[in-house]
Length: 225
Image (cartoon, rainbow, N blue to C red; front, side, top):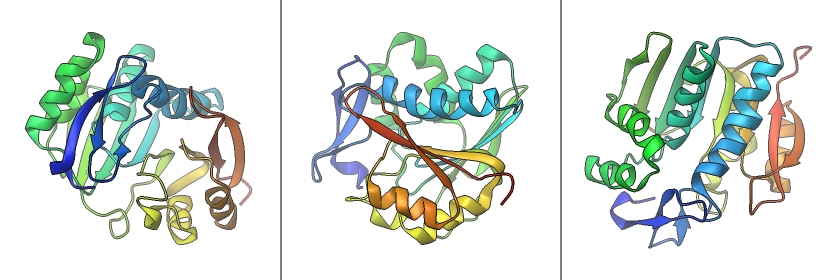
């Protein structure tokens, strides 16, 4: 996913995304970037895990991308005043110019927090606030160690583009980093992905997806396993 082939687009909810013109692949749903991230990762991920009894949350994200998920997660933690530790990995980081273009196109209410996560240093822990810690890592998820987490955001590019991040072997790696009772959420609902999750030991739910997608997947590492 070469960042040099990216062009900014506006999705249906008015929030921006990037289109890789060489592959015809977008970073977010064309039906609405912000509403997709909110639905999949905040509502089905963070909110679900908090409702299940977790207070302070540790998140690991596969695919930092534009920083939208990290920004929405930080904003959610700030709004509800709970501690959040957020680790994210990205193999192909955007350039500062691309980040600036993305932020300038974002809704005004998101621009400040998007800027904060975009300028946070790579490969070092930083504080978004007293209770929110962010660590951005440059690297390949196939090789890098994962931090233990309560919620894993699987926001890699689709299996057709990045099949190596959706294999049964990677699902085992995702399973291993989750705490008992932890969950993994993704926009993808393909049968092969669901079966790979199940083969790693997850209990998998097909739940309603964001606008434009009938379903998404949520996988749980059951406490009894």
